[in-house]
Image (cartoon, rainbow, N blue to C red; front, side):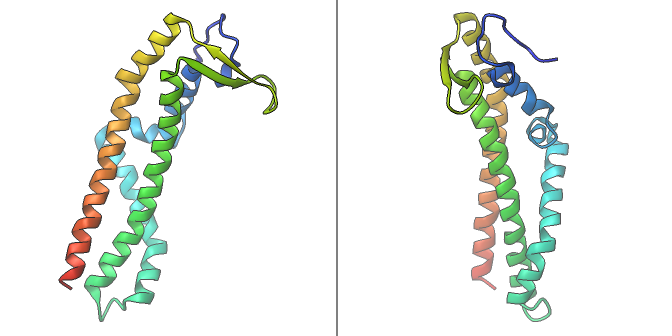
Length: 165
């Protein structure tokens, strides 16, 4: 069920609270709110499937029989790029909703791109939206940032390993 405020002139689908609800209900963006085990499983599946592209490219550069270490590191790094892009898309979607929820004024379109308007939130709506940001969206953003940091750490470790191969 969509939350709506009758005093709000913003079309229902453009209200930040409803945009937040759409993200939590969506197949892809809801990955960020899964429990930790399922979240990691989803990203691991992206990494595994990415090997179908990264593996042949790595094999073309480093023959697996001759350079197994470089092949594995190159393939893992290539597959990790897809994980990074997935995380980036998740992050940008949640960032957009966070910014819309935290903003005091909302830009919206009544019927098309040519008739944009702004609406200043009432104090009650602003308080509700900012509480939602603090207690629901910010933890998601922290999780995504930590995942980015962990991915960067893996790249650094892989780079150090590359030096010694």
